[in-house]
Image (cartoon, rainbow, N blue to C red; front, side, top):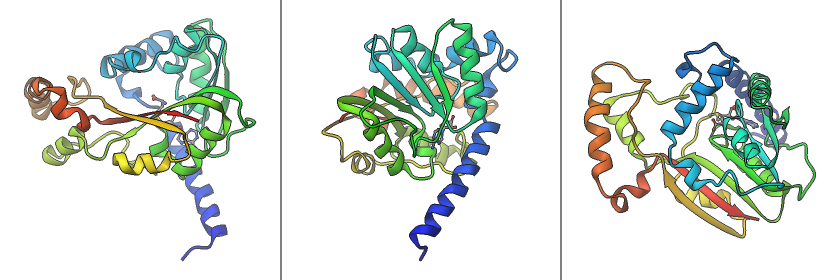
Length: 263
Ligand SMILES: C[S@@+](CC[C@H](N)C(=O)[O-])C[C@H]1O[C@@H](n2cnc3c(N)ncnc32)[C@H](O)[C@@H]1O
C-alpha cells in the first residue's frame, strides 16, 4: 500500500501528465474550420458548443451574476466564461493548461471583455476562502487527479450560501450504451484521467454542500464529428428515435450529470 507521501508524489506526477495532455488536446479543437486563435476559431467553437449543448443557457442563467464574482475552474478557451462576462459578472478563469489560458485571453480580447485569467490547479486554488458568488466547473472534475480535492477547493472559495455549478459524466447514459454497442470511441478516452459517476457517487463527493440538485442533460444530437456508416445510423435513426421517447423515461440517461449546489 502507498504511503500518504507517495500518494501526494504520484498525484503531482499525474497532474503534470494531465496538464501536458490538455495542452495538446484543446477541447473540441477538431471541429474548428478557422485557424486556431482567430476570431473565426472561437466562433466555430461557440457555434458547435451551443448546438450540442443547446439546453445549457436555459439551465445555467449566465446573466444572473451581474456585478457578482464568478470563478470558472478548468475554463478551457473561455466560451462559457465569456457568456458570464457578457451577463455582467466579474469573471476569473483558471485552467491547468497554459494553452487554454493563452487562447481564453484572445477570446476575451475579441469580445472586448475583461477577465482575470491565469494558469492554476483546481485542486489547490490560489484564492482566499469565501471569495466567490459562483464557481462553475463544466467537464473538469472527471479529468483531474483527485476529484474530491477539487470539489473541496470549490467549496472553500465559495461565500457562505453561494452556488457551485458542476458537470461530470453520467455512468448510466445513452452514450455509454451506444459506444459499447457500436464500438465507437468516446472523446478524450486517452486522457490520463477520465471518470464517470453514478448519481450516488457524485452526491457523495458533494456531501459538504448544504443543498444539491442533480440534473441529467445532454441527449443525442446529430454528430458532425463521426463519419461513415455508423454516423449515418446515429444521425438518421438513433438521434430521432431516442428523442421521440418521452423524457420522463429517458431523463436519467443524459450524458451530463449536472450539480447545482449551495454552500
Ligand atoms: C474537457 S475540457 C473542458 C473545458 C471547458 N470547461 C468546457 O466545458 O469546454 C477539461 C479542462 O479541464 C482542465 N483541467 C483538468 N484538470 C484540471 C485541474 N486540476 N485544474 C484546472 N483545470 C483542470 C483541462 O486543462 C481542460 O481545459
